[in-house]
Amino acid sequence: MSVMMQEMSWQDFKAKKDEAVVFLPVGSTEQHGPGLPLSVDAIISTELAKMVAEKINGIVAPTINYGYKSAPLSGGGPLFPGTLDLNGNTLIQIVYDVLEELINDNIKKIFVMNGHYENEAFILEAVDLISRKHENVTIIESSWFGANIISDDVMDKVFDEVEFPGWALEHAAIAETSMMMYFRPDLVHMEKFVEDGVDEELGYAIYPASKCSVPETGLLATARSSSVMKGRLLAENITEKYKEIIKERM
Image (tube, rainbow, N blue to C red; front, side, top):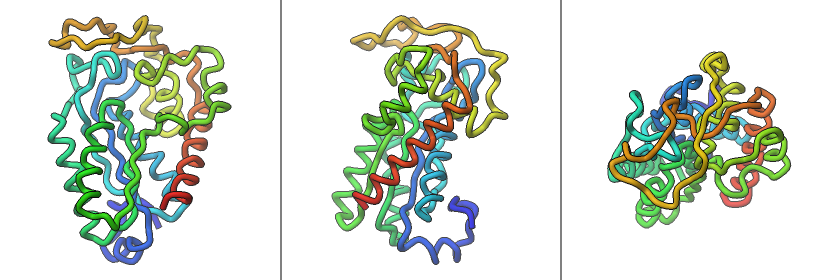
């Protein structure tokens, strides 16, 4: 039986839900350069959640496909057509409401899988507020690119030709492109690849966002040397780490 909640009947869900870890993927609809779709953050968070759920007999709830405002130097910003942003309070309320509905269905273990750099503070606010109300429910929140999730050995293999620029600038670059090549090769168009990026992160923010210099491609770092093999290495490594965390903490 599929681990995807939207593919289950209500009877199948009812039979499994009380003992399962339920994963809630949260992504965004955001530009990812010329060669990747707007749905990268949602696809990666969903596919990683699915991989972990299949290992532990979990359930993957329907993905939240919109995220907090894309920032110029971590996502390209809102000036690119197709980038659809939520206000912070909206994202908090959506995550809160979904978590509450899951808890009302007697779910006791929830893992929120974030795939969009700018989302985290707002997801954590929702998790904090709901956990104060439901202290008997264990909720873990994690961004797949968070500290100590990917092993140093895998990072060395993924960034073997290009220096790791930091996760803010690693947008539509090697890690995301490689995982998309692994998960959804039909949506990756390497024939549109261009070498582009920015020199460094700023230590400040500029408003309006149009005053911040972002390449016309929307790329913040190079995707050169991306591969299916690197995508598989990342996905499998992240999956094993999350299995360990769930076993230890839930």
